[in-house]
Length: 252
Image (cartoon, rainbow, N blue to C red; front, side, top):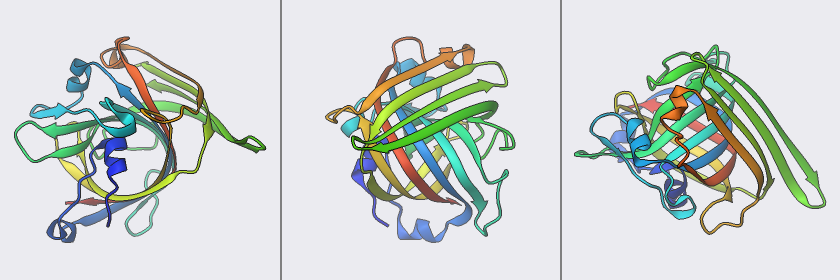
């Protein structure tokens, strides 16, 4: 299994695993998703509030230089057990907040799931202990013409506490880069982790040193849950399309 350094820079510190660790894995789930990833630089205090004690946020490099929070808009087209049985209906939409982080005094380093906005029938608090019940509406469209491929999407999220998140985006797409990696993904509630084997395609449409192909984007939040994260000082650094994200999930 190869690890692509570009993925680590863009989406959060991929970590190669030793053969002994790989043998110890217990397969639990498989996913197929379509994603849009918004890379933010939020205040250090906001990022720190999203990780457990003993952990520290870090900033990414490459085209997402300075990003310390990824907001992942994900359309899950298939979720199943390792033996092929649908989980929570097998299909859903969710919004995932991921902080690149490391242990202050330990070896842990990787993407940390800090918050999941999960619609029914997904389980709450979920595998990472941070999911909150939310109603999510999403539309996504694509157009192919003489000028190439354009896309648009809107997301509207209301949590069980009436916090709200809205996204409206239009962009021009390009050929994605295929990336295959194996990584640990940590739980923002406990610092525990699961192991991901991922095959995905990534099209960085906005980022450091990248031609900006995002025509327009609106990101709005309201309510106390989001106010502590987005205080007006945040900056949207990167926008990436992930037309396929296929992963096998294992427990260590």
